[in-house]
Length: 202
Image (tube, rainbow, N blue to C red; front, side, top):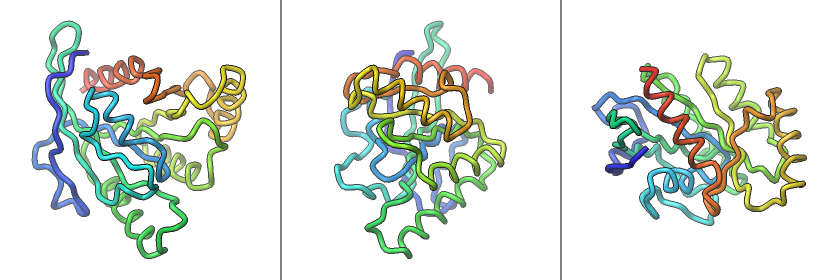
């Protein structure tokens, strides 16, 4: 895949503010500071298009990034990466956390085509909110890929144990997990392959 262009198309808190152009969407879900923005920047080969921060809870809007690329056979590909507010940030007021969840719920109710990526930190057991989000996505019929992020933080031996634990908690085969690191770029090619396969389905 060869990237041609990428830009922020819209920042929204309600569906009336979503981009009017109907394109396939790849939506990123995860806890605050799960690394969604860094993943987007890595895949679109831009350093700071998606805003990142070391402070959890930075993404408070639903951000649509419009991307154009060419497949290996020069087939044009267009889609949105959708960076959703992170859930589970303990220091945010309950009213603000509830507001973020309402934004996510409204987004999921929209009829647009979506592939959902759920990011979990490879170093930690998935939390209750990760499990709940995964269940909600699956029960509502969305295609979901689980990405074990921040793989550079663990040794090879630690990684295998961590992946088995994540897979057990989510009740899926370990080989279905996508291992990723924005630092080492591990997993970038596999995720771009998932993007292309999804877009060609339509």
